[in-house]
Length: 523
Ligand code: HEM
Image (cartoon, rainbow, N blue to C red):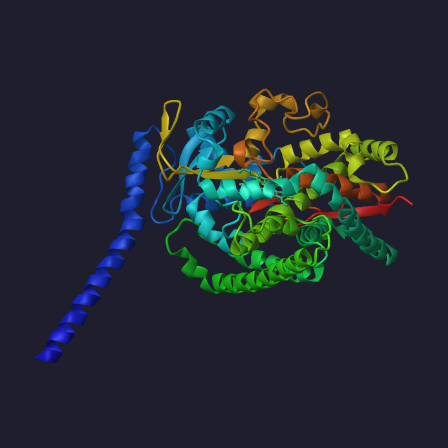
């Protein structure tokens, strides 16, 4: 009798559990997406019909495949590349305009490539009130954790306040010499390659190594050995996460590549442990110095600057500092590497600009070692950078999430809607940039250094917009100019016959088959 009751209870508990699991699955696969779909429609937002549970992912995969097939037969060098990189968005724009809803799995995404809509949207919500997409936050947790890129609300304000001074030009100046040293290491490597009879350099790979070294030194300073170990593990983690086919937005899809996620998590834990030991060592050293009364050196790396007000009320916790270190690495090295990669591609196709920049370097830097004070004089180089970022933005899309219903003109963006801002489409919009939109014309920034003569102030946004604009842009501009000065002073470049022009989205905008360049020493 007693055993029967126990069995009945267990059976009931199992049934309830099964019901809850099923309810959760049905809710997230069917009920919630349908409710959200109806709400978006009622609010005047249309778009391609989703299917469950993939949303529009299948349409996107098919459009990308068709596009790849038609491109592999030709290797035309053109800067009209938006529809190559995002064929599905180019297609949907024709049917639904520049603002529409599409679905990644069961997550609604408002697509925005209308600069005026972006302006209104940005005016409607202050920087700290924007959310960041929950699914991307979870997906990229091992890389960014609770760092600035995904922080929200008051947390974001606190992080941004602590970190902003580290990027003041006066503090960045001290980083110039380490940038020169890391670039010279790369140049020495190239010289040995050339001396051994080869003329071709895989530029993207080389520059990614150099900018990785720079960001690790800029972040950790003299304790570079630990920095190097962290750097290697972070890179493997990034490859583990992003070289697999993933279905972001599809519920429970991470179980399809569980092995990769486990591997990324393991690497993430190891990185956290390394960074923690580095922070503890530095904190102890600082305390010992404070006790002994010996004056400390002025902080010259980002980690020391974060630790400087460690005990103040607004300071970050140790875990938050660990996450910011990872954020700097991911936010701060591939973007700069890609800005330089696409620049070298453009300068190879337009050698007249290589010559103009070399001439400018001769006048501004001469025979001296380039330093931070000279960079403002490199004006043409600034125009070239702006134009390269316009045509080939390393971060071609921005994202936000509505934390409450947002009214933009007649449209209401319902709470929880993810927003995907296609800045590449905006910067390739003929309506703003005229008939020369797909031409490389750095001189458009001569008269208007900020917007390149674009009629709309949201028409040029390679570093984002509003309060969440890239915190590292001063560091990026400084690094870009120093590295480019050093390599243009030593070598001339042309495209390798093996180069295939295929810009592709792989989290950032990258050349799908690398950037092989033929390199000639100038002396
Ligand atoms: C050419 C190089 C770079 C480009 C094109 C770039 C681009 C961007 C873009 C588009 C955003 C998003 C802004 C938005 O959502 O409105 C961003 C944010 C961010 N970037 Fe950069 N970035 C570059 C270099 C760097 C560097 C060198 C660092 C740090 C060392 C860095 C750290 C960050 C961080 C932490 C954020 C998040 C800011 C926030 O949400 O408050 N970036 N960047």
